[in-house]
Length: 394
Length: 166
Image 1 (cartoon, rainbow over the protein chains, first blue to last red):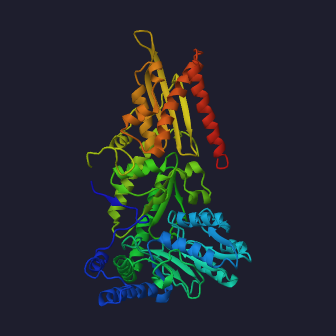
Image 2 (image 1 turned 180 degrees about the horizontal axis):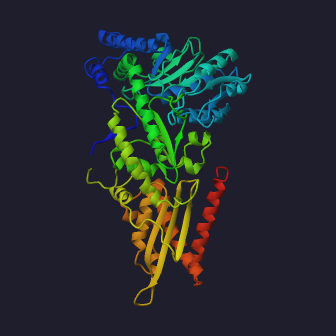
Image 3 (image 1 turned 60 degrees about the horizontal axis):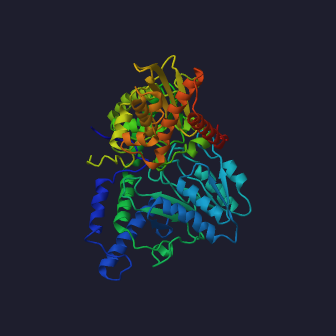
């Protein structure tokens, strides 16, 4: 059976050009960037070259970029690092209520350490209101962290507005750009971003590489202490092959992201319009205005909920038909609770259980979407036949 | 797929997936003799079980027909189908002896976090029989009464836990 991968928000396959760029750094140019000999210095050069490419991409200086092992690590470093370095200023941190679990859990842990956490509400489309940010900032606030785009429902947050508010208030602003990096142009200076997280494996780079942009002068503590790599901010032997791959993935994005974005938007809008024709189906996240493109929505994200159906059953039935997608997020697949993102958008728990996230990517074709549109209504019909609620009115 | 049938996709056994793909006995029985409704929609699993009771040649009451309607995950649908297979044609007293482990065994195993689905299936059958007995003013054994009360109590606890969400 042909497999159709529609879970690009979970992870992406490494681009062959990325793999090719990485290979020499595994066995041949295996040096440690901290070594003084030529082999080590060759590695160091490759590392700094990668840093330059990525820094240019978001209008940062190379020394403002540190490489980490994952977006989770970057987000942990941002929250905990800022919290512990700025204790004398205050203990209040503001996040949104739809952040990725690595922000949520870091905030929860910081609360246990005595920090005060405010979770900003979102509207029914998952949007944070920048006015709420302004209202939430107190004299002892040290950090605001709002994601650039939602991993679940694709909502693009007004981070430039929030950045401006934070700058005016003298509070650090961090954004988790794991889902948007590469897909939406980012200028950390213009957008007043102090810290930014991005990940390699979401943009056809390898797993095991993430980055944290830390603006010049930002006071922050490292999570990992040791040999002093990454300007003392992230001790660990450099995972050079993955970082080189990450930089290559960025280079590829630089060239083609505009064209690819408009291709994805076309496919996404066709998908959304067609799925919404299925009875009892609803769109999560920003709406699709008639005749226009969805505003504030990631180019590759579609998220639905279907009446009387449970999401896991839907995902597994699709998988049995060769279509790979997910319920709320890949991380939620082993948890039993409904998605907190959807609950924050005002969905009832029973409705949030019936959600399906379809995320498109480079290999997605119109044929794939057509196949999905052929299979999905049949599966929904079968699952509804089994459901005790099928005769209820919504 | 390797011979090891216990792991498929890291989560479900091959047998669970087969059952999920082609579940038996789903739908509603009109004029059912007993209905068991368990689970909570807020938690994401609701199971309704319908039974039709008849007497066999020996004059014992048997579960002549059984069907389920389930809103839930792969495990919930698979255990629903399995409990109908296990109970169909059995005498009521035999059916009441079905345990969660019988369901799990028939499915070649369940992930630990989905064990509650097998409990749900067994509970639904107990509730369906209880409902049948109650409707027909039959004598309810102490054991069945206890089980029914336990199921109801757990239902209340869960409902209370999710009150803020409902």
